[in-house]
Image: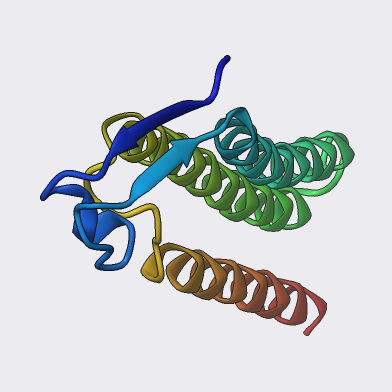
Length: 136
């Protein structure tokens, strides 16, 4: 991929933080690679959660009915959280790639990590509650 230098148009001013239209912006391969790295990191987290959910489900085999239900609920919570992370990472990857290619829109996404960390915190709290209720 080669470095492309083009004048900034009207739509790019919002994307680049209000630069005047006389300046040039160079689009480098490192920008695209950074987007891919970010995607891979999010997918790694999703795959880790899915793997842990699979391990928990496997360990539930041969247990009594109450224990099996609790472990299946725990693994389901982790699995759905991992799927949410995977969907978010895919959507963010394509949104940022589009913004980099067309130089319109914004590559900043302030609410996604906050929402995902809230989902993760709620999931872990739910798993803790399941474990505490199972013990009692």
